[in-house]
Amino acid sequence: MDLVEIIKALGDENRLRIMNLLLDDKLCVCELEAILDLNQSNVSRHLTRLKNAGIIKSQKKAQWIFYGLNDKFKSENELLVNYLKNRFASEEFTNDVSRLKAYRESKFTCVDIRSNTQELNKELFRIFEED
Image (tube, rainbow, N blue to C red):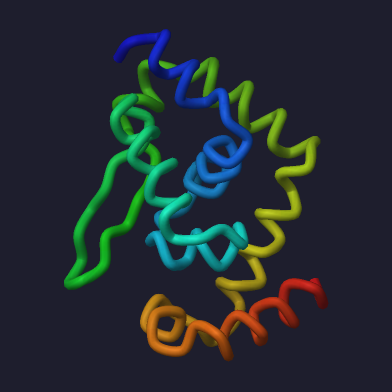
């Protein structure tokens, strides 16, 4: 993995937000969209950049593609990953983790997000704001 590409890929707030959520979890594009309140195009573009740098990997399950941190990246960059975990815990990234937790505790799934986006977004927004 090229260090320059890794640093460039991490040089964007939204990509850092995505990485923060993927440190300990696997999520699909629609879940990232809902949690981060970003559109599909933006999320996909950022995921592609992180994947091309070798930071994340994808896994297809039925019609869904789930993204998670690349094990090779974690093992080869343990100090960087630990540094980022510490920074994520103490900065504005904690709001995203709270939204992920609220989503996980809700009754919603990827299927719900895809099938009823407008209504679901209102409900998720309500849940996220309560947390």
